[in-house]
Each structure stands twice: as C-alpha cells, then as structure tokens.
Length: 93
Image (cartoon, rainbow, N blue to C red; front, side, top):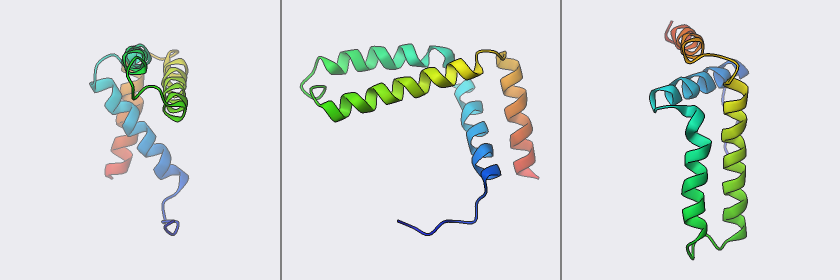
C-alpha cells in the first residue's frame, strides 16, 4: 500500500466529474447497463463465465452502472455536460 497522497475530496469529485463528462462522449451512457448486461450474458455462457467471483464482479459492475444512470436521469445531457465543463474549467485554472 502506498502512502496517502496530498489529494483532497475536491480532487476526487473533479475526477468523477471528468469521468462522467467523458461518458457522455462515448454514446448514450444511459444504455451502458444494458450493453454490459448483454456482454455479461454472452460471457456467462462460456467456460470463463463459470466463476462465482467473476459473476459477483459482473453484478457489482451492473449495479454501479445502473446507479449512475439513476442518479443522473433527473438531468438532461446538456445539464450534465455544462456541470462537468465547469468542473474541468476550475481544474485548468
């Protein structure tokens, strides 16, 4: 384990905002849980998918993706982008 760096909770939030902003450039992020589910269903039918730990990780990934969509669903894509742009501008200063 490395020593704690000097980053703060604000740095974490900026990084999350940048991540969410980048999601909007990769197509409709609201469909990502469905895409993940499709990929996982195919994988589960293979020998590699017959692994309990892997299945648990897949379910966690799906839940996180669904939670992100749920949290952001109350906002338009334009509102999300504007908020992320503001955070990115603050970081650049």
